[in-house]
Image 1: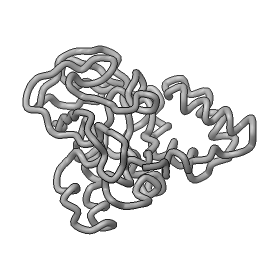
Image 2: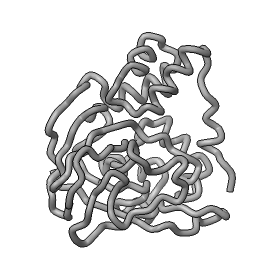
Image 3: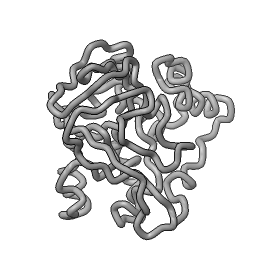
Image 4: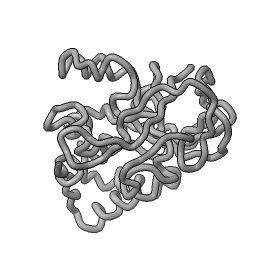
Length: 225
């Protein structure tokens, strides 16, 4: 399968005093993909975006039709890049891809590290006050890769599955455990010990096990302008 590769700069986020690099556009030529992500790509708030476990964001283009059905014919949904993704492709969704899956893209190797936890900037990106919550509630979240082996990539390079280390832990199952069946101790115990999953997500699971409570999502989903 051949994906569209996208990058973007930091820019003002409409309707807020904040900045964001959520607006991504397709790249035209070869570029370096390193441990921190694609050459020429940016993250406005590196406290919560980017880094080793969120080096590359993949959002299934398959979901765009469902969003058009939900939201109407928004121009933003006419082409990839609406969700801040670096990789857009058809034929790969959260119920097919698992944490720990290893893919080759051009001269690189990438590994699925975690699902996406949508944030309030999506609300302003789409002009839909609860867009981040909708993304979370539907499970149409996309996911992130860590880069195992840096190298050059280019438009036209295929994304090829190389290995599966935890095929039973699809991103859909992970989403369900985190956002639907939220205090299932059996699932949480497995998540907390899932070594191919990003450490931050393992900590979420362990905190729920220790406290018996689910964390407050409102700051992430609602934020402030």
